[in-house]
Length: 95
Image 1: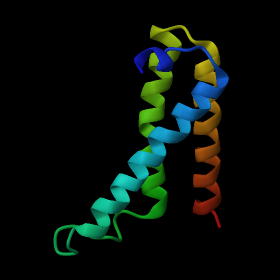
Image 2 (image 1 turned 30 degrees about the vertical axis):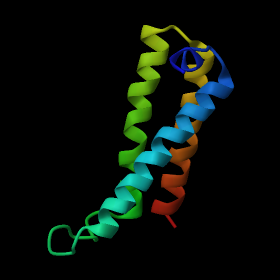
Image 3 (image 1 turned 90 degrees about the vertical axis):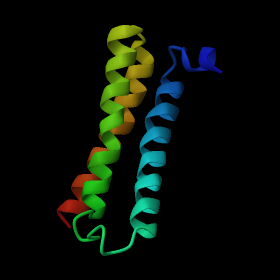
Image 4 (image 1 turned 120 degrees about the horizontal axis):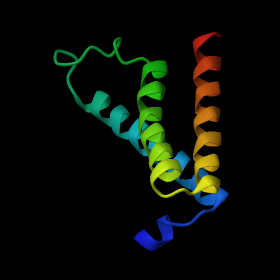
């Protein structure tokens, strides 16, 4: 399984770059859904903030693939998905 993740492929970068933020976003939504409102204020965690928090692991993943493994194609895929998530954030923020 780990050998599959160590490929220098644009499509692998797209897959990794989309999967990890989506899982983190869904996990944070579940936490907000199941925690009582006395513990957590739902107004603090807006959709825009959740999107920004879920993009953070992509930056770490991008750094790992570009600097440590020297996989440029995978890094480009991760960067493309991160850019798309950033555009979604901007569209939601300014509309």
